[in-house]
Image (cartoon, rainbow, N blue to C red):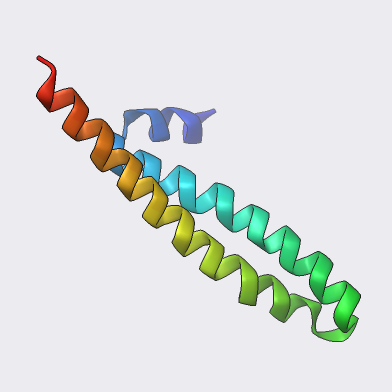
Length: 78
């Protein structure tokens, strides 16, 4: 529960970046594992990285965009 409390205490933008990167990274890693096991099981771990890392980067960028949008919306409405 300490991790959840630490995440809640972060400002909006870093919080959304962390959540986006984590969620899409985990999903991408799972997809990479399945595809790797179907293609060639001895190198399935590499498929986890090959798909999981770009997914995590995409999640971070989406989280950054969402955090920026929330920040702009909050500042424009007093």
